[in-house]
Length: 107
Image (cartoon, rainbow, N blue to C red; front, side):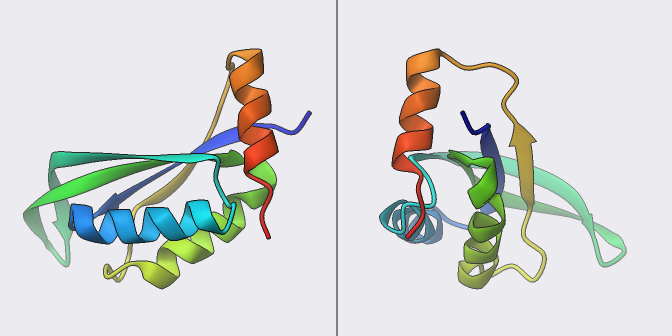
């Protein structure tokens, strides 16, 4: 069975995250997305430390769809350099893993 992955990304607002998340799920690029508002980030950007309130999105998908997810996130994102990290899933409940693989099938 194909490997599942999590794609981690952040968004400047819950509105932008929900819009993108809906598209990702509608395109069947993911079985599920989780949106976690209220994150505070401190980071280096253009030579200085910035602070931002952001929203985290976790995207549950197949490894083979990760590149399409990455492209969709970049296309819909307002950041010049959005955080996009594909994280391998070491272990998952068998039934839950099967559900991710079944539902995330792309168009």
